[in-house]
Amino acid sequence: MNLYLIDGNSYFYRAFHAIRGLTNSKGFPTNAIYGFTNMIMKIIREKKPDAVAIAFDSPQPTERHRIYEEYKAQRPETPNDLILQIPYIKEIINAFNISSFEMPGYEADDIIGTIAKKAASQGVTVFILSGDKDMMQIVDGGIKIYDPMKDIIIDEKYVIERFGVPPERLPEIMAITGDTVDNIPGVKGIGEKTAKELLSKAGSLDELMDHPEKTTSERLRKMIADNIENIKLSKILATIDTNIPIDISLQDMIIKEPDWPALLPLFTEFEFKSLIKLAPSKGREPRGQYRAITDREDLKRLLG
Image 1 (spheres, rainbow, N blue to C red):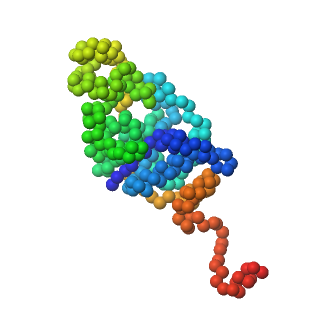
Image 2 (cartoon, rainbow, N blue to C red):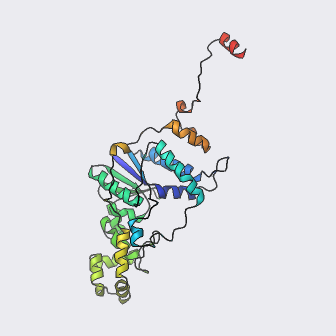
Image 3 (cartoon, helix red, strand yellow):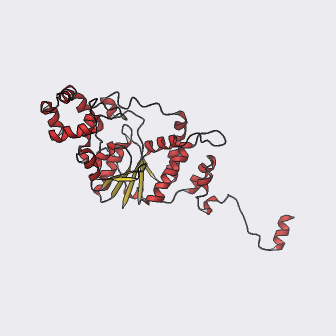
């Protein structure tokens, strides 16, 4: 059995920015709804997963925000045109009978990480749809990353070749480099290549912090020594929590037939003609009572 896990926030942002200016005839923005729906349908059609689940970020502050007020603070406000569409995206997900998860105080990454670990422990092959490097830390024998933008599968070998450490130690790299996307500080001026070399020589992040004097470059030695607290904080911020209190049912995540009577009114309202055509013909039948005209006399009576 294979399970595909999707970061809902990442997907609807991507959909919103990929398609510009799409509205229905009433002027309601539909670009994110249309793009998101097509992305989900493409995954189901092309990858043929046995099961799918989608996770969303909580609107409430997380533990990361509590310990570091500037966490993700640089991100721009969510565009109003996207805010208007999010409830309908979630409604469409429900109508597709796809499991979705959102927990107060937790990020989608933590939800996905926890579900992935639980599912993999039950023998499920898990694919996480993401292009974000922080998700690579939970890759193992049963968990892989599928990057839909590059159309590549990221496994343990890929992570080790790129970062020089096994996936579970990726937060050590990010503790040094930081992450501009999430506003994780790290050590300004040190990139992936240098961080990889530092950890390779030191053996571990703890050893590097305990003995920065062993660093051969005086400049790097000072950078590490001056940023010990930033490094410790950054490692905490970069580490995905794979033990959040969430119950999962693999049975509930198995792909099911969409609820077309629920989907069609939405597709009609948003004027998604191409998606309406995908519905089974019986799902497109108008409501009312009908009978077939089978002979000429019946036709005459009908025409009066």
